[in-house]
Amino acid sequence: MADQIKWTNVLSTRPSLEAAVEETVAQAEQELGCEPDLGLVFISSAFASEYSRLMPLLQQRLAKAPLLVGCSGGGIVGLSGSRQVRELEGEPALSLTLAKLPGVKVQAFAINGDDLPDLDASPESWVELTGVAPADQPHFILLADPFSSKINDLIQGLDFAYPGSVKVGGLASGGPIIGSTALFYNYQLCREGTVGIALSGNIVMETIVAQGCRPIGSPYRVSAGERNIVMELEEDYGAGTGKPKTALEALRDLISTLSEGDRQLAQDSLFVGVVRDEFKLELESGDFLIRNLLGVDPNTGALAIGDRVRPGQRLQFHLRDAKTSAEDLELLLRKYRHHSAGASAAGALIFSCLGRGERLYGEPDFDSKLFQRYIGNIPISGFFCNGEIGPVGGSTFLHGYTSVFGICRQP
Image (cartoon, rainbow, N blue to C red; front, side):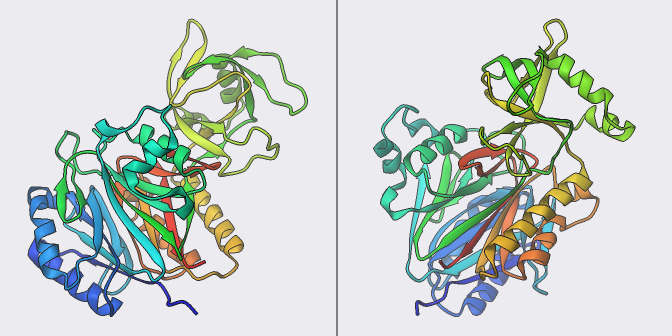
């Protein structure tokens, strides 16, 4: 029988960076009890003036320095001294994960956004960026600068080169201006691009992507649209379709059928769900890629959304609030627990939007505690992101207002 994966996380809230590094390293090394193969570190933006000191401190303190990547976050997730999961928003926090991964190839990489190939380049051009063969069937953890990484092009290229591989991660957060975020790679501070880890071999990474919305009304089919502009919609009845309307007319008709509470919610929490599987008739949570409604042209009745559309594509309007987000995540966790059939996870990562957390739910630690309630008290760490990376319908996307979980276990 192969050696078991070992995974541990420690979260420190000490306001001194030296003390936080000392606490996380000492406890994580003691809990792991062996030399780590992988390190992941997430540091609060409360330490922004000290980002440059983190890597030398970690390299000095770790008895055996593993491959390591990390980034800054406006909020940090990890396990406190009492081993309770915490989501610390806007206060000093350092989260260190160490993992022993027997039978797993661990490859770290850093990619500059200006070095990305053209989107019509060969798969080999994308493989050169990571140094990992597609035959290894790697899973990816991606941490990116929100300003310089060209992350949408990167994840599209990685999907092209590694079509069966899971990609999860997020955009570093911490401030609204260039240079206010940080990436860490190979014990160096990086300010641009994307850093990542590829894991292949004796490991499985499964995902939960909770976009936190519920559908309203019925699905529509785009009868006229180009780029990100939806001009006409028709109700989708499966075999047949209804009479086309301008997109705005269809939306107004839908809103007139809603309850007073939903009409109020639609004023500032209305989204569009784009159906990923064109052939699926019974749609459910997870079948939609949720995108922002960007604007309305009252003269033409067109709607602009945060994704490309084409005639024939199906979409459905959605609403989001705290209750909906909680119910959506709980439904996905129940499904995961049912389909995993008791398989034991070693550890997990969470990449959650800055718009979730306490400001959405009115209470701390909501998503991560709900995760542990259904999946178990496994080590979990992560951060609050400027955008979340995760799969929907077999392709990888950059999301907003989403919690993405990457769950690691042995095959």
